[in-house]
Image (cartoon, rainbow, N blue to C red; front, side, top):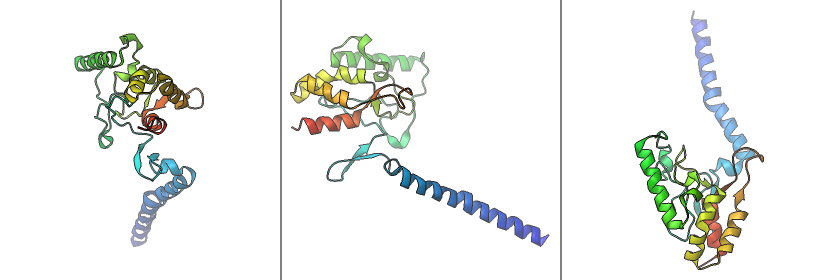
Length: 190
């Protein structure tokens, strides 16, 4: 019986070491080797090395000279991801969507039909860093005017930063708001 107990304990310890440590260490090493940028959090750095954000997490931009991300159910707090969990017929959800739609149509001087749904509804994780190209297009005039440049310059940057669907068929075309705003800062230095 002592021999069986010793074997069981040894099996438990070896299994815990392999599954609890070695397996994770192996995957971590593969990730760092094969996908070094993603393993570091897909961070975006300035030329001096300063971290300005992640390609994967939305940031709140409120100044008129910047493109704005889609609404966040968690106020852009990466430590608290999640959606609002409101159903499409929930009165609170409908009220929030109407308020956002009214604000966008007034701010961008567009009709309600021109506003993509992504600009009035929060994403499931609350931190979606992308907007559709149409959402960027309706903001182009405001951004260009605030920066004192021709709207064509904003539109060129939108086109240059539009990512196609993954593998050409998964998802839709999208624009990373943080990368677009950093490109604006670089192209139209003030």
